[in-house]
Length: 191
Image (cartoon, rainbow, N blue to C red; front, side, top):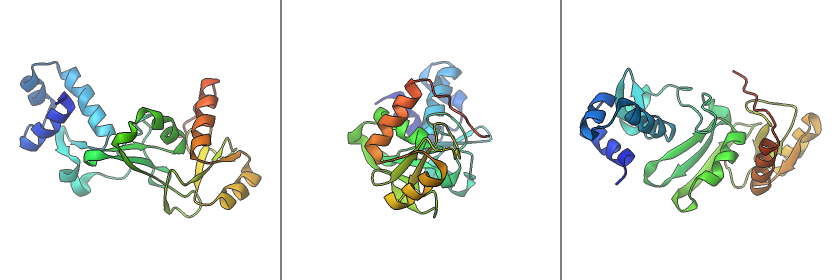
């Protein structure tokens, strides 16, 4: 069992801070901080005033916007959120479709249970795999190149007529965003 899995078990047993975990493992505080940050990004634990809590224990104390993107670390806005649900209750969250698509190849397919995002127009949840994406529009609600998800191809096409960009399915959108990033397209973050 790797150290992150052991940390989850130890938190459940009452090890509630980084110092106690570092002492238990005989490692530096920075080593444990790195593991804790990864577990936070995965949505498995929450830090509240220095105390470590399992996500399910935290319940309502996790306030909107406190989670950060697993790709760019920007705070996550619910209406643009892109979430991979993995086995054992783990989640990987991104701030937008742009970052969510870039994370895809780094997640093992056998660990993935589902992927969800939100329709840009009606804010309803939809499967990332069946969504239509407008890549490269002049509307940049989060990261750049802009990548915006829609439930229907027709809505995506209407949006693209007004704001530019190319309508693509999941696989083509991943390829397009990766290529645009490799060519040096800057990532603009509206904070």
